[in-house]
Amino acid sequence: MNAMTRIGGFGLALAVLFGVSYVVGTTIGPSQDSAGPAGGAGQGISAGAGGAAAGTGGTGDGAAAVGGLAISAGGYTLDPAELTWPAGRSSAYTFRILGADGRPVTAFTRAHDADLHLIVVRRDLTGYQHLHPTRDSAGTWSVPLRLAVAGVYRVFVDFVPASTGTGSHTEATNGITLGTDLTVAGDLRPAVLPEPTRNVTLTGGYSVTMQGRAEPGESSTLTFTVAHNGRPVTDLEQYLGALGHLVVIRQGDLAYLHVHPGDGGGDNHGDGHVHTDGASVAADESPELSFATRFPSAGSYRLYLDFKHGGQVRTAEITMDVVAGRTTSPTRPAGTATPAHVH
Ligand SMILES: [Cu+2]
Image (cartoon, rainbow, N blue to C red; front, side):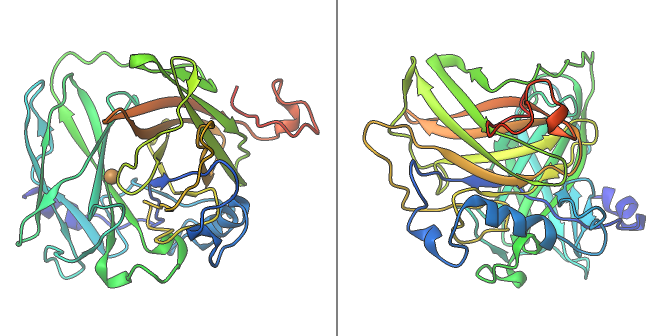
C-alpha cells in the first residue's frame, strides 16, 4: 500500500459525489415503495439530486454531481494495493478504504445487497466490469480480477459509509465514489467510442432500447426496455435487489454520474445504488427500467445497464451524446415531446 504515501499528499479536490445507480422499473406507475416521500415521478427525484449533491465544490452551474475523479473525497481515501496489473490472468485485486484518521474503514452501509460496488472500465470505455469485493475484518477488500487486454483502466469504488446512515435521504451526500487508475502493460489499441444509438443488440438474442432526452445541467429520465428474440422480456430477474442497474460514465475524464431511480424513489436513494422494490409489471409487458440523472455537461457518455435474465447477468452498453440546446438538434425538432438527444 505504498501508493498511499503518494496519495496522502494530494489535496483533495472537490468532492463532488457521484454514484452509480441502480434502478428498478415498473411498467406503469411507481412501485409501492416509491410512493413514499418523493411521491411523484422521476422528475422530482432527479431535480433534487443535482442540487443536493455536493460537498464543497462542484456546485458550479447547478449541475450535477459527478464522482470517481478523485482518489480521495469526503474524508475517505481509496488505497489500492496495486497500480499495475498483469494481462489476461485472474488474481485478487485488493484495496482498502481509509477514513480521515488513516485507518481502514470497516463499517459500511449495505446498498443493493452489497457493501461496496467496484466498477472497472478501460479509459476508452471498453472492458466494463461490475464486481462485488468481499472485505476481511481488517478492512481489506478483495475480488478476483482479470483484465484481458492492455490499457489504462479506471477502477471505481462506490460505497456508503456507515457513519452517514442510510435512511436519511440526504441525497447524494450519502454515497461516495472514489477512483484510481490501474495499468495493464502491453500493446495498447484504443477503441473508438461506438456511435450514439437508442437500441443495442447483445449476444444471446437480447436487445435493449432506450428512451429519454438529456440537456446539460437539467434533469433527465432515461427508460430502458429489454427484448429477447424480438419479444419483450416480461420476466426480468432481480439482480442485487433491483431489476436494472445503471452506471453512466463521461468520455474524456471518466466522471461517474449519480443516477437515481426514475420511478419515484425507493430507499437508499442517493447512495448510488438505488433501488425500488415491488415493481409490478403487466404479464404481457416488458418492465421499464427508469432512471433519473443530470448530465453535468455536453459531451459523450457511455451507459452501462446491467440486468439479469435466464439466470445470467448481462450488460447493455449505449453511447449517448448530450448536446446543449436541443431545439437545434437535428434529431430533435423544437417542441416535440419525444425523447431525444440520443442521436
Ligand atoms: Cu454493484
